[in-house]
Length: 430
Image 1 (cartoon, rainbow, N blue to C red):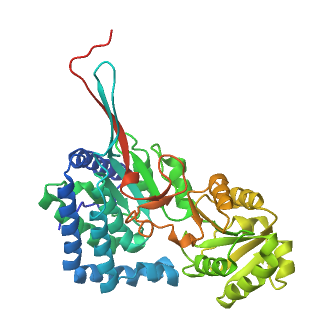
Image 2 (tube, helix red, strand yellow):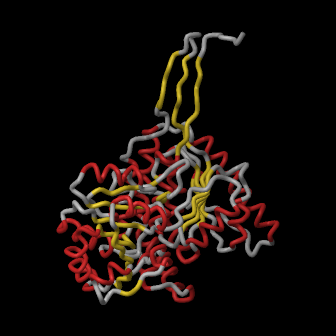
Image 3 (cartoon, rainbow, N blue to C red):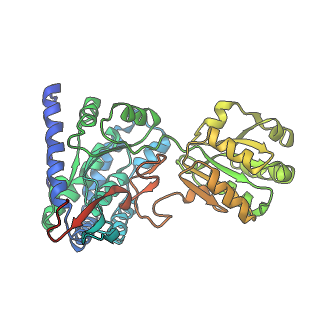
């Protein structure tokens, strides 16, 4: 299988040269990939899925190496579970690649077309971004998802995965790289930076002449480092402090089900709810019941004075509690006097990720959706649906809390930009 090798224990100068070589090869690959035909990309992705299935034993062997090393990295049980692969999970990885292949190709889409009085035809056409530098946590499935999304959208991608999943990621990337040339596509469209040296990240972040976009996916410290050092645009996802607001016009049974699901269905993920807001008109009826449901599932609740009065066993919430993405069995609670007060609370404490309103009042849902500053608004649905697959986007490379150039789940379309193509018949400007 094709590999891009790294010099052993390189001095910084050698490491810089090596990183620049990767970026230069990615830039050339991006040029070659930009005009790849849709059918070619679909066939390639299908073959990548088949290659992954054909190499289950090799991928499991590589994953066993990572799992054996996990205690030395101090991984939590949850982190080890995310790292662990079995035959079913590898099948899920392959199926995820096939799901990307079934998506509409965004490249070449004519966004706008108009004819000018002078005979010029102006087209605004969707095109790939070019080269993406993707830095992400230790989850082998993310390696395959990112590679598939990049190939499908015509972009070259430089993958810098967590050291904890280095062997697993390498086995998956080898499957991708061996297939690409078989379909006339450059192997260097997908490259893995196989080093844990943090200096390499800094080198790539300085290469704005070769890399078009950096995407960090991991802890807040990593994201802040990338945002601080990068010379190219960064697609960020700082945190997922997601809210559920139960309006005065809510169906309270629905609200209970959604709140419990949003918090408890899976707590350690970015789209899990971390804060519950309840309108004062329904708080006395709703809050004690949902509190019992949540505490029965091991969730610690902390709240403001009004919430504590209704649920005396609830702890006191500080400002920091309302700002915190817990990623675990804890939730902040507040009672609000109005929808606008709920919006103000979310806009003050939230992270612009996912926020939900439960209401039967259409005007209330419209006002909430318009005024709340968030990437994804859920109306009468769990925050857990903010996911590329759940929203029909396919595998995502991240969920952006930015406003430019993409927001929310980022799939193939979000890894494109556009260019103007102006066609004439000899026109000159007087």
